[in-house]
Length: 392
Image (cartoon, rainbow, N blue to C red; front, side, top):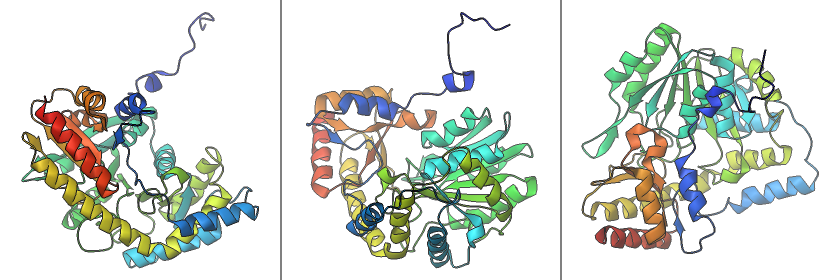
């Protein structure tokens, strides 16, 4: 029998979750007006006015009711058109689901396909949620590290293939990667997809930065143009990054057709549906947002050049080139603890960065700088960092 006097605690998988070191640093710095905050992944500019205005009007017009589990038909139709323009092939509404954020999309599809004990492969360093979601579901993790080489992050494709064994249930891929900016080469897609098909592995991609690339093209290389309509490939995405909508909590999934209805059921037992009036803003973003995405890409490219150029001038700093995203992931010679360095930098220089160890053991010794900020803010932060390093 259960012990009625036992302490009320969560199950072991939840107790084992690591606390976010990003939040640990941010909690210490919040409320300090002297701190320059570069720790979270969002632009310091608000959501474009045309999105805010359309959403505010929808709210005032009373769009405050439940909607379809998978999202309003007009939003899914807008998403279908957006995806066809982006990837050059049609995506029927029967493959699309609207979710309450991108991380919600990841959790929903994981709940749908991951069982306790399943093997899940993740490339690292990685956004903590991608690693912790399988752990919440009692899966077994196999981590494949990225490596900094010749000034860029690289994935050893052979090493990934070795990890994709017949007992693998899911491969999670995040490209462009948070925090490194690594972006999957287009030529690697066919081999990865072939291995997943061979062993019946679910390929789940986390694609929030696919539009935020540094170079030609409209998007980072995607598996969506290569995958059949009803195979085990799922793309999860969000409105947060490309449309500067982090606080709106709105995302989507592109699914194999046979999974869509089941995802609708999982949505029902998680959130029921995404907020009605916010779906109006999401639809406007998809149909009228290309110019704002282009503006953001230009801003991020300039910011990347400013921040990476300055970091590389600082003695003892290694700063590989990101191929996409909004982050500089760099390390300082002699760093033993990323968390300790980030905390000391916060206290002494008023610079708030994310410790690289928040993204796994492979990030130990590294720091992440979100450069999606006004040029003057990045410049002031760089000067403070340079002065701090001189005084170490």
